Length: 251
Image 1: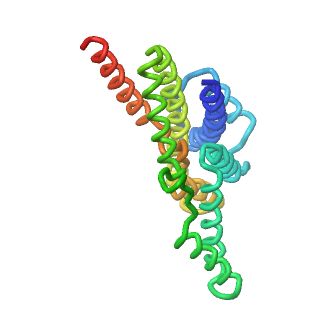
Image 2 (image 1 turned 30 degrees about the horizontal axis):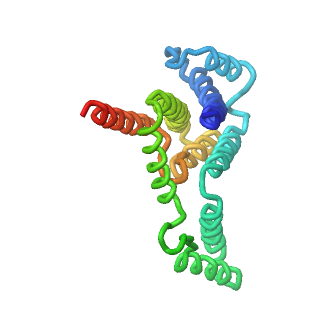
Image 3 (image 1 turned 180 degrees about the horizontal axis):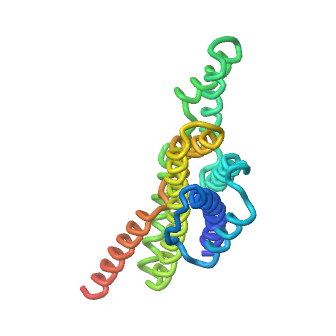
């Protein structure tokens, strides 16, 4: 439970910083278009971000694209904490080999990287316990389902409801972050529509391309995507289990 709360707080950290980037772009668009549309998000923290963006920072001079890149890099590092470390390292090695091959079309360095990539591609590492259980994300799902089902039959329903509520709240926080990133993408398109060329268009196009090609995503051990759909999944699962428990009690 404490880990879920800590994870939720870290997601807010990323959401606030992406929202600050959005405030910078919105402030610039207001100056150019002289547009005073109402703000959709009107909470105190968002108001503070907008005031800082309008009074302390200039979108045309600050390196917003570098700042957004660093946010995504930190988010990727945060995502790596919720992956199986060994298999994540192997995947990263494979990606690095592809990057080296893209830089060198020929030569001994390409051959070395190609040999490593081919080794991982043809014989990927795997670990099984007596050839019965494959130790990967699927094994975690199976064990979790078994333990969680036992807890449902033996423990109180309140425990399940509280944990499900925290998980749903965490999914809501992630959805806020992803919505802020989508808003950044829309604002970048708006700026590119105003500037057909120049350094400002190049900066915004870099930001747009970054979001378009590598959009941020978060999954728990490559099993559950943390977004709005996760809330529906958890609600359906808990509802089905509660109905099953009530049937056991009544029948």
